[in-house]
Image (cartoon, rainbow, N blue to C red):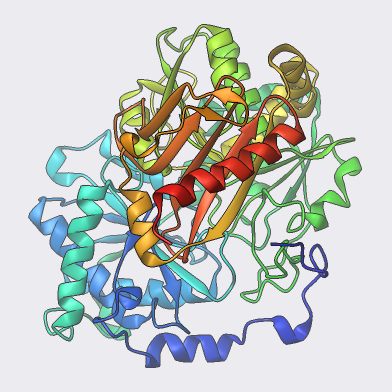
Length: 548
């Protein structure tokens, strides 16, 4: 797909989502549960959809909220539920719907003091800090209402378990099955309150998420080093849920932080268009990040985050926006040598579609690599137990342990990844991009690419269930095939696709959970020409195992 002619420019009025129409669709459209596209389905990060397409409507949230209430009862989870939302228009509507169901089921719900938004990592942090102090029967869990970086018309609903991070497949399958049964039963078993009943229930508890999170940051980031070095930090909240965290953070730790955009607007009219001409709050996209990139030389480090703050974009003065894979590699090397209390045997996590540079860096450090399928849920257990120091995804999301080696969050944390870039510059005197260039000089230059290929639902199903024996060829792009994977080496979990590697290159193919395409990830450590050859042969290999 080519680059849209208006990519990187502000959206025109005619292309902005009609918010009243969107909200009407949320309340008026009803899903047809005989269609799989309109059922509740939890992907790698919760249930997502569009009110316009009847895949994210009031009925969905009524059903999912009741299913979560039923799950909590089944599991004897008796503590308060921590509820957060981002700045998407549908998030506010879904938030009110969820409150009506949760309180009707007798669940105490903790919400931001005075109202407002609560980022994904802040919910994870609140769950974990609560549960460390209480008995199992008083444990808490949480819900984050967000479609992440997706366009303004989308909605998302994510359940975080008592371990603080995205619930595993066993849990989400239970919730989805129950929710779809409730939808099929026309919601007769859903309990819900009116707004007046919610307010009169006494079950909605205000909680100062901002202070609770900000006051603890010095235990995961060297804030004093950043302050002492006087690092100038520019922040573009991109209209997201972390917008009110930066000023208290700067004041508490004496940091030089400038928020370059204070606007919150559910149309996200202030965003520059992504490569396909759509508004998408993707902080890893140079097109979406144009507003901040224009200011890059005004700061030592500039950062952007998506609406729920589980992703990060790092901009270095004189360079520009870092490739997400490159920053992960730098972060791992820095943390490995600047967290002396961490065990030498601790693991560093990456997904199978993240850069091979990470493999080379971790091997060069003499550390242990844990390679898992796509989805941050695969890191939850390791981070929770303190056996995994760092977990990162190629889509610009990561988290890591506290200074003392204990858990910080078990969900992606855009705040700490942004602040880590400033810490790296403060401590080493070099920004992350400069350190990445040093890694390239040592380990070789990677050429990385991701593409989407049109596929039928049948083809996607077959690709997701491939076996290693389905690949019969022995070479790829001029090199002998070293490995064929359908399960991740780090935890033996199914990839839901295929990864084929040679000495200097690899590709991975996996079906999209939301679109009729499959995604191909490619990387060469030789050249752009070799990458192009990888792409051609990867497509041919996948085509050879899929029906026409």
